[in-house]
Image 1 (tube, helix red, strand yellow):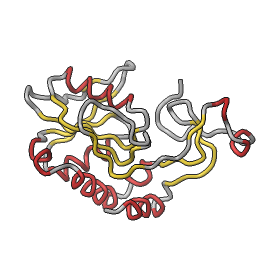
Image 2 (cartoon, helix red, strand yellow):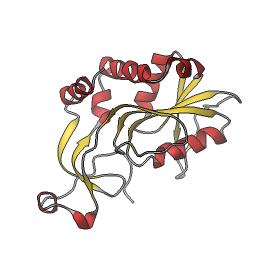
Image 3 (spheres, one colour):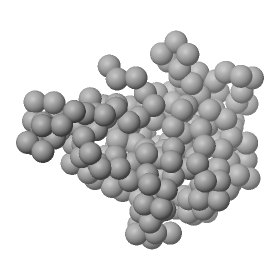
Length: 194
């Protein structure tokens, strides 16, 4: 799937938003991708997951025995990646602030895991999810995401495969351009702001 085709999927789902957004990183942006909207159509989610799976080299795809994603944003794409790869999918969540497997999910020693996110910006939640997966006995062999917003700088400690790289400018609170400074910020994501 070409970048323009991926963006067409986001536009068709009204998931490419414009305005003034306060991101979970604490930075501000005039654009936001609402992956939950693009994934709410099961057929679209399936197409995007198949395209993302195709970005992972064949020999690495064959190694993967489980897919694990961080809740909330990664749950749907993680499930669809499990379907695309023909393996079980589960998720980690943060009931007490630290990612962990719950709900009877478990990894067997030797499970080779693909960690999947919806959007990666700084990579912090991805690295935290990887640490939880490895603490539970899995070996993360790669990371993947629908969208890489890191400008190609994210470092997860494993090979990383995004479906698309989008680099919307972001701003620190004290560096807002006039068009953002004059409008209230909306918190569009699922994570509580710190």
